[in-house]
Image 1 (cartoon, rainbow, N blue to C red):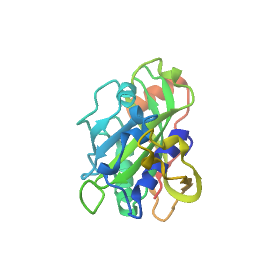
Image 2: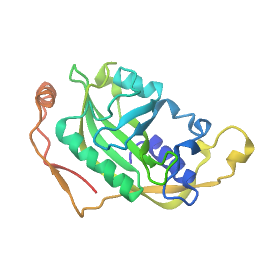
Image 3: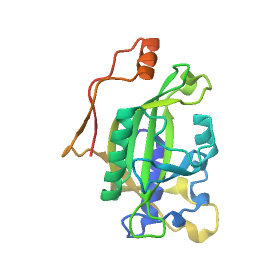
Length: 228
């Protein structure tokens, strides 16, 4: 993971588990993630082929130029990315692990940025995960979008996240009550790639992506694969 907020969200998710494979959505305390709350969203993903926004922060909605509640998370992704993402969501549920997705995102005016999206599985009153808490962050300078909303995304890489050494969790502690400040340490996170069953994505780009690449005078990307 490249963005600091991605580490903060996954660290908070990990502490919420308290010995369980994944936390429940009802465990989430908005005060504990107030610094990043406007970027956070919740997906209902019982059908991983059509994950729907249940909640979405204002900054996240502004980035896509619309109120996202009830919208299909995959609707702005190109066709091959949608297939790969659906598989990644299934694997995240099966492995009880967050997944970090790197993508290229563009506005209709062809402004292009690099994006990092983190999705961490949640239960919702049941024993098996059916939802995700997630966050999307633009990496680097977002001025290429010229203030326009993202209209298109293409996945370029994916990695599952595992825990190793502890790190400070000071940034995610809620302001009150004091009892909520008892966790002195949070897990350090590293990205682990599993290559057991790579899913190869076709090199062809759809019409919109070709338009974007032509406008920016960049070459088509090499073969991509969703990493399990």
